[in-house]
Amino acid sequence: MATFQAPGIGSGLDVNSIVSQLMALERQPIDKLNKTQSLVNAQISAYGSLKSKVSDFQSAMASLSSLSSFQVFGATSGDDTLFTATADSTATAGSYAIDVVALAERDKIATKAYTDTASVVGEGTLTIATGTASFDVVIDGTNNTVAGIRDAINDASDNTGVTATIVTDDAGAHLVLSSDETGTANALKITVADSTDGINDDDAGLSSLAYDVGGAIVHRAAISTAADSVVKIDGFTVTSSSNTVSGALEGVSITAKALGSSTLSVTRDDSKISASVQKFADAFNALRKEIDKQRSGQLEADSTLLNMERQMFSILNSGTAITGSNQSYLVEAGVTIDKLGVMSVDSSAMTELLNSDFNSFANLFAAPDEGFAFRLDAMAEAWLATDGLIDARESGLKTQVDSIDEQKERIEIRLERVEARIRAQFSALDGLVSSLNATGNFLTQQLASMPAFNKS
Image 1 (cartoon, helix red, strand yellow):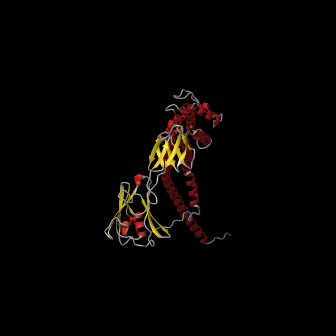
Image 2 (cartoon, one colour):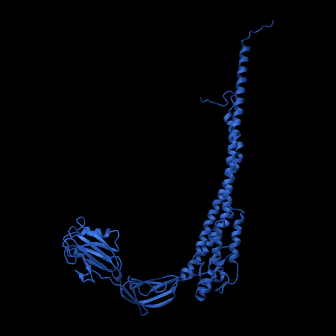
Image 3 (cartoon, one colour):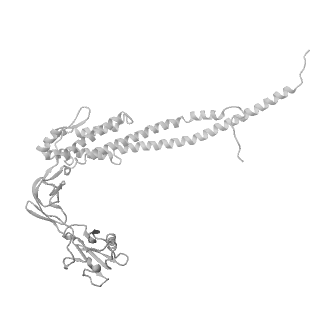
């Protein structure tokens, strides 16, 4: 049976309050550990923020740390209504005469007119091919209408690239079949096993859908006929199944839009290079700002920040010769750092070097093992690596947090025993005082009941 305890009732002492105050004193080591742990967690968070800025800095160097990233070209059409063009890093600057001779087309055919979409066409099996790929569609009493055949074709799980639609004009509903892709390699062919009348090539029943140009089964004129595009580049003829011609000019893709002639210019896109350099400077400044912020905040006096700055400026201030470049300092490419450590870009100086000595500019940043961006990227990679500069510091702090948790747990166990002992002592004291009070009350009553003696 449980017993009810009310500490202090016998003695009149506020035992709970006394115990709470004593335990507050006993908990001071935990309070100190909590403050230390909060500080360590704040430092871990600070390293997380620092790591994010280092990651941004590394990302900003992605377009500067390899020589291939400087091969940035743009392709300009002399007449966008005739063709458009794009260029990648493998392109070569130059000017070309472009003549769009023919556009690619897809096969598209239509059936005769039926009364409406619910009209019955016929039954049997359609074998529909686009080029060398084909699929079968079974037409029976459940799907033998114009609309039913349309849905059966479109819903076929092995459809190789044919779309069926319905066009209703003044004459009635026409089932229209079209190859999804252009070019003669995707020409449409439809053969029929007609179970309605057993004739597979007439213009009745399901066989009215038969279409085989090579087999001379064409019941009506096609809406459009599969054809390849033909584009001449400086007089050389290039044929493509689509209206996009790739591979004829290395690194350049041309999309034909209409017949006609114009010019194509492929030039180096210095604006993208300039934007990459500016992005690099902005990311550097953001990282330096983060280092300054943490130095005056949670990571005050942390040697890691000083170590990072020393490594960065050791690279930036180096003036050793770089293979493939006539320059040894970033300032020669218009990139400067002021006395406050802020990086800026002189676009005029940068453009001048790009135009006068592009290879030197590219190698200044990206020469393997030597270029500034190459080395800074390797430095950032080492900082962010597992067991790298930042990770090692974070791991040490997390180990410290775990150690504090263990210390707190041990102290909490001890405090439970201390509180139990103190309460036991006060319970004993409470009982003793209660017993003494009872004895005193009894003696007082006994003395009060004794007869009084009169003195003469």
